[in-house]
Length: 284
Image (cartoon, rainbow, N blue to C red; front, side, top):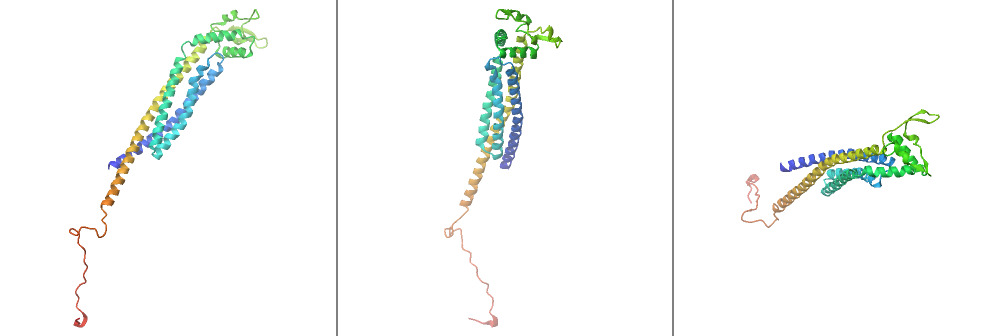
């Protein structure tokens, strides 16, 4: 009866671990989608951001890919009842959990001093507006996409010059045009780009941190199931070996070689024919 309960409990843990691994596949898709989305957003404004800001998003993409491989290994280990594969699954899942928490901490840590970094990069790019096509494209894209102008306001363009010539406010700062043919600008964006871009970075960090912590909790549940399954498989294998050894001992101890039995307790069986009279009262 104990062995039956052990088999039932092992089967339940196996199915639960397979269900958790299916959930891991979905979380892997979520991790990759969040990482690629944030990476794409940062790529649009890569001219103003340091390369270190791409690290959390890159880590999330790598983690998402690893989750697929680890989930497959966990399912195989559970179905094959392999203690080694299940324990390796738990270990790799722990490593992934640490990587996710590291990405969340890095995303929050990089928020410190983000406004100073953006102000410096935006100012430097604005002064390269007329002499660098890449800088011009980056400024126009940022101002038109974020609906902002300058780093604090559109007045910042009054301090930008090229060859000692004052630069007019770019058309990307225009809220809308009076006449599309003449490109006459009517109204400029009042808000600077530092606040808008810093909000994007803060929200991205929030998404990375919240998503990583939520998925880490799910993975922690998977680690617990994997450890439980590993112990259950080990107990079952030990129980099987014990039962196999007992069966072998019973067979060995219950076998007695012919001619070596104890004569005191064992007696031979003698079969005797019945005494029937001969026909015709014949006598030997």
